[in-house]
Length: 315
Ligand SMILES: Nc1ncnc2c1ncn2[C@@H]1O[C@H](COP(=O)(O)OP(=O)(O)O)[C@@H](O)[C@H]1O
Ligand SMILES: [Mg+2]
Image (cartoon, rainbow, N blue to C red; front, side):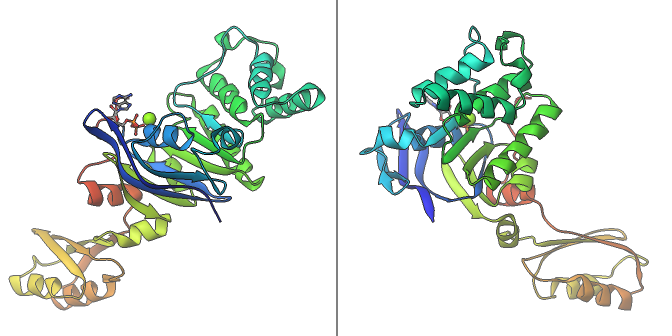
């Protein structure tokens, strides 16, 4: 079941299109990984989906209702963890949660219970009475996440929640996201870290320059790119032009590059060419070593955009 969708969204800043005809579907119960380099439009997309900014054209629906017509009702069911941490430094951890719970209409015993549960979930129970000013970056982020969870949202949207925090908190956050999914929360998780998406997401959407450039499971994305297989060979005798020609003529082979006794062969999706390649080079004098690589999400991104995800990264 689709619980959120964006259809043909355009968002302009002046003449610049931060979102350029974007479509997105979020399925109930999934962790959808939204991956893209800095400036791709991820935050803009999330802010549009959460009803924080108006778009220039296109439709947005959540929980079966149009965002524009039911904005208050829909916002009650969303939890948003913004890219910059939004907590009050002069309220204690508990008071921060009481404040956000109160905004969402929680009162009295129910509010207290939810605040206690949520503090425990982010492992801040013993810091409940402390001001966050002295918290580490990771603790602040955990409190920030708790503020977005206190009202039990159906859809949790997280905007690069692990940037600039310690490894332990980062792992803890990733674990919490998995735990929330188990409990039935749908999660839209935004990041420019490929590894996070690879380990967390059941479905991946890749954005670049205001466009959604690919979507699917990790397996689907990897299958769809051109160089499904990279085979590296070291052969005994330097290959002749006939041998190279024979390799090039194998089904699915896109490219054969050779440097003395080293040969690299790139085949298209599903070609499974290791056996065929070996048969050719064995005949031509033998093989010293062979390795085959499957492409990663980074290769998917590189193939689609001609650049790496790390390009333009500031850290
Ligand atoms: N309020 C704004 N005014 C003008 N340009 C903006 C504004 N917000 C974002 N942009 C531009 O839109 C593009 C996408 O930004 P953003 O959605 O923050 O990307 P991401 O979150 O993927 O890094 C960037 O080029 C950014 O400079
Ligand atoms: Mg952003």
